Image 1 (cartoon, rainbow, N blue to C red):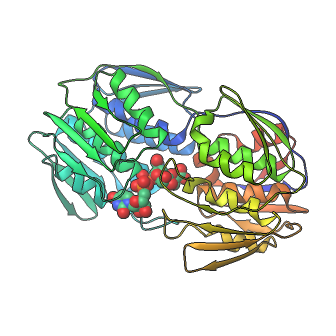
Image 2: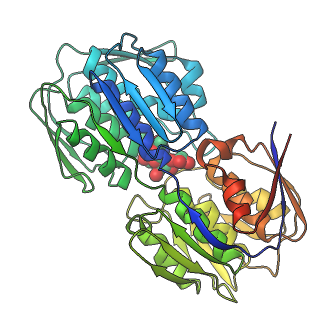
Length: 417
Ligand code: EPU
């Protein structure tokens, strides 16, 4: 199993290009299931999670071709309606095929995703909302068995905003009869990106990016060519890498508007941030100031940046309070950061108190999930000596060529078996 060995203490400097967004690409490639004919997507990131979803689409009968960052998908041959436990177990986002399968084939059998390292992550809100469109749902032997005669639009309220839940419902309702209104919908940029692609296919979706999304059903969609938006979490991760190492990094091919809450917080740490059209230049301050964060649905501070931000606070001046409100178990990185010398106390489950220390010192650590792995890479960049990260396969799920990109900025990261 791959490991990463990082020699800390190098200042990062130069340009780094951001890849396409994993969490935008996943629902967009899945939306091809709604169309007869070839769809083409550019700027698709080269990631394990993307490989997994493409494998699932092939399994369902779609033709899939990948050349570099371009993917061609033709779901004319869609003939299977089952997403197996094997595939869903590897990647929870496989649940995204549920909506399109019901819309196209009127039935679906999708393994119920289990919990994962960061929380229980139920899909009850997806299922409740789908049932309001007329879908009959049973849980049988660990599978969601869903069927419908005719999908009918309805007024649907989500008890809490769910990203993939909102995406599933949008994809189920674009071909439904009549109007669907999704209230308390998720507002993430990935929702807007999906709605944009579906509208280009001929769907009629309004309000994406706001809590109320309105979908007028259409009889059919047509093939498209589209490009995937930049990855805002990869962008944020490189921003923090620059500050941590007192560096000067120019992040290119990104969307500054998608990292607004993060830019606000990073400026409070003393970072010098210059925003251009599609790039962000970020210089680390001599002394990093501490500041508090609380994760919230977009446009609040993203839970997917919480672990990386915590690393920054471990070497900041003073004390920071980090509150995680989205997932109940997203502090697994804390014990690993403590092995590197961080001073962190968890109080009341979802609140971490981080007291800045002079320096971190390298040690072997274990990656537990994607963003926790990124946080350990960041910690390794500033820890004195060598940090060895075990189980780096998590990183390959969501960060394209991370060691190559970091090394091109001056980091010293080596992959080993
Ligand atoms: N929730 C429920 N019931 C549901 C659905 C969600 O209780 O039916 C709860 C969740 O347990 C959680 C909250 O609602 O407490 C929000 O979860 P959400 O459904 O929004 O998360 P998701 O759609 O499963 C996506 C991203 C995650 C990201 C979260 C939050 C994708 C493929 N995944 O997950 O990304 O953390 O939104 O922003 O878009 C990552 O990339 O590392 C990652 C975990």
